[in-house]
Length: 256
Image: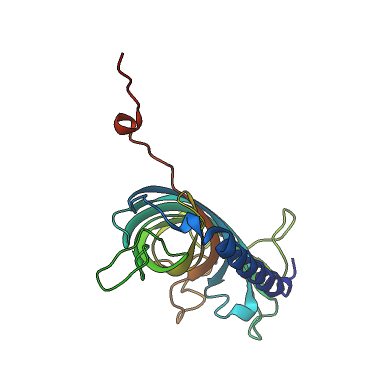
């Protein structure tokens, strides 16, 4: 797919998301914003978005192609401000180098699976109020940041020319034995939009620092001055908090 199409698609998604958020605020900003549910427990998370790489082949957005990204994970809310999260994330990275030093452009495509654990900090309390006062009303929008560590499992392929990788494409020899494993440090920020006690939507941008220079199948042998390869992901996530009922107190007993 032409990379010029992706910015327009991303802008359209952001516009639709903002319109949806405004509508959701009108629909769910009334009675549903009042809650007696405590901010603790397990949250199930699924997400989808786009990914882009910063590597030896491509160090700027102009030469990077956006690829798909999906994730699944869980968050344990320790308090209304702090949470611990773990997730498995897939991303497809690709880019094309346009260099006058080589007779042919070099492209790469890499399949990346990351397993990470992060600490999540809400920049605002999930409950409305202030100055020592906490309301039962929960905030519709809560900004947050997250940072953690983990590892990535990656398989890159580099090839001459431009365009997407296909079965008949001539490819370069692997620079090392793949699949490879590298350490990763994800750092991100996002906005969580509360719909009700069970469902929320979050928009999130995360940058992944890795310990490898081979996400693009080109190591320091060809680019001695190159730094490690990194990648970023912009995603929309659905958060589901399973309702937990206290069976002891919710059960009704009758006397004969």
